[in-house]
Image 1 (cartoon, rainbow, N blue to C red):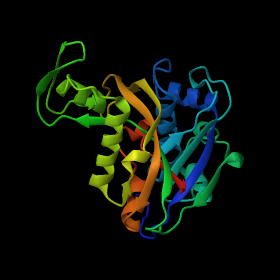
Image 2 (image 1 turned 45 degrees about the vertical axis):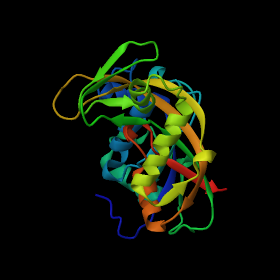
Image 3 (image 1 turned 120 degrees about the horizontal axis):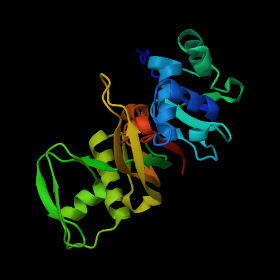
Image 4 (image 1 turned 90 degrees about the horizontal axis):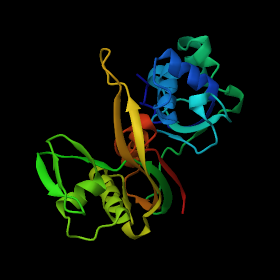
Length: 266
């Protein structure tokens, strides 16, 4: 496990070869036609760095076609406990030659994040999130067109659908529901407060995800989840708790590149 006693946090920029990612997917016997680039990146980071793998991470938009092994390098940002040199040493020790070569080490870089954050300086943030909720009990509701919808205890639902099915007569917007979801995340986690009026949904899509469940040779699991980019303004209330928030990320499905909170001065 990484040593976090010194509280140092690095932002890492890596560039991964799409051909190498496709090769890794075949090595891991993943169905390349249905596996997302983000999940291949998750697998690559684990193979490269083991416990030091950057997490959370964000795959920056680019023209790469990983499934066909073509296009430019896949650009990845992430938070890590070590800088570029230590990560490269870890990859030299643990990764196979094929996996080691999929990273363009000369094009990679890191920076050390602040050890503390001021509580009186507003910060702009960007977050690629998967806004879902897990239902604590079974229930039923109705869709906008009146169709019956049911769920079981423990089911994971799109936060918007969960709200809309329970309140079919209300005129809900996705942006408003996702805004409320994000405010709750900050309320529960602590470390910062967010101005609800500043939150904007810059992008929305429904993404198909395919992942291999842990343990044994169980079949790949397929699901559809919301993919949202949210921006806004936050104020740090506790520097240590905010650093913990950066380290752990926000929301679920971090293995698909969700949850990395990117901040800058407002």
